[in-house]
Length: 599
Image (cartoon, rainbow, N blue to C red; front, side, top):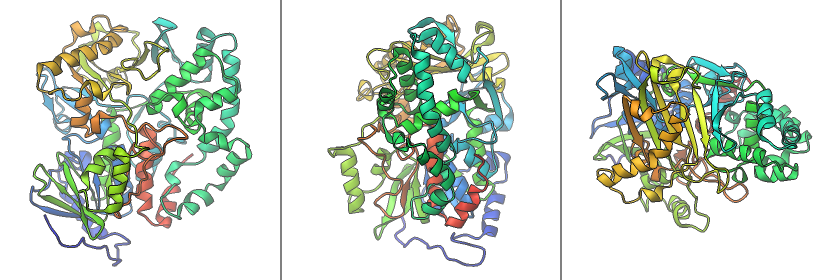
C-alpha cells in the first residue's frame, strides 16, 4: 500500500470545497459508456494493487451509504462507493435467478438483456409515505434533493385485500385495511369493550406531537454547530408548535410508559402496538421511543394509510440512488471488499481493498462506513488511534456494551400463478403468540408476494414470494456450524419450517409446488450483507442506551446506517446517510438542498 500523505482538497476555481473540478467529474461520468454502468453503477473493481483517489470513500452500498454518496456527488464531491457484493443495496439489495435454468445471474445483466428471471428481494417490502409529494419520510426527501426516484405503485387505503394477517385472535386469517377507519374496525373486532376508546385517547395525545414532529425533517440535522441554523432556525415554527403542546418531553419516553400514563389497558391494543414497534425497529414497545411511534401513528393510522411499492422492487430504490451518484461522476464499485481503513498521522485517509488488501482508495476529505458498528470497529487497525480503540473496547466489552438485535431466517421461492389463490394479498403477517415476548424466535413472520404488485419481478405467469422471520432468529443457534456441512443444511430446514407454514397459510402446498426455492439464515446475512453475527442492528433500550455517534473518535472517519441515529428501518437509515453528507458540506449548500424538501 501507499504511505504518502492523503491529497488535500484545494479551493481552486470551480472546485468549491472538493478536490476535483466539475469538468473532471463530467469526464469521469462520460467514461461510464454502457447503460448498465450509468444506471446501475456496475463498474469493475479497482486493480488489486491499483490506487484510486476520491474526496469521500464510502464503505458499503446500503440505502444510507448511497443516500450519503448521491447528496455529496450532487454538490460536487468526487465520491466512490465500495461494495463487497456483486449486487448493490446492502440489506435492501435485489438478486436474480434465470428462468427456466434457475441459475444466479447479475441483475444488471437481466436489465441489459431482458431475459426472463426471478427477482428476489433480500430485505424490506413494506413502504409508506413515498408516493405522495409531501411526506415526512426521509428517503422521499433524499429523492427530492437528488432529483431521482423510482415509479411508485400505490395500494391499500381501505382495500381489504391489501394486507393479510394471522394472529392468535384470528388464526384462520384476517384482512387488515390500513388507515384510521380500518384500524378502528380492527379494534371493534378484536379488542375489548374499552379498546377503541383507549386508542382514541392515545391518538389524541400523540397526534399533536406527531403534527409537530412531521414538520421537522431529520435531513436538516448536522453534526456541527451549523445545525443550529439548518434545523433550529429554519424549522423554528414546527419546533415551537411541538413545545407549545406541553407534551414535548413525552417524545423521549419509552412508548409503554406513555401507554401506561394514558391508561391503555386493553390487551389486544397493547399487543398490536408491540407488534408495530417490533416491525419498525426490531424491539418491543418498551424499548422504542415515543417519537418513533408517534410518527407511525400519524403516517399509518391517522390518515388514509397508503402503502407504496417501488416499481422494480427494492432494486428500483437502489437504482434511483445510484443514478443520483453516477450522473455527477460518482462511482460505485461492486465486488470490492474493504479490508482496512488506512490511518496516517492520527486520521483516516483511505481504505485497502480486494481479497489481498493491496488495492488502495485514498480519501481527500473523509471515509464514511455504512457497515454496522461492530464490523466498522474491526476495519481500523488496533493501535492506530487511542480514542477509537477506547470506543471499540467499550462497544465490545464495556459495562454498557451495545446489545445486538437478533437476525433473520428467509425463504425465497418462485411458483406458478395457478397455485396461488386469486384473492391472495400481496403482503401478510403472522403472529403465532402474544405471550412470551413479541421477539421470541419464529414468532413474527412477514410474507411478501412482490410480483402481485409488479408482475415484471417474475417470469410471465409466475410469482415470487419472500418470507422472513422479523429480526427474531438468534445467532447462538448457528455459531460454530460449518456452512458447508450436512448439519447446516438440516438446521436451515428445521429453522425455516415456520416460514413455509406462514406461506402455506395463504398458498396451500406451496413448498410442494415451488419451482425454485432456497433458505437464508443469519450466516447468509453475515456473508452476503457483511453483518456482524447477522444482526438486524443495535438494540437500543430507551432511557438506557444511546446510538453510537456518526462522528467517530478517529478524525476523518464517519458512520451511517442503522448503527447510528435515527436507527433501524428504511426512513432512519436514509436520514443517517443524509446527516453525514450534510455534515461534510457547508451550511449554505445544506440550506439550498432543504429548499427542495416538501413536508
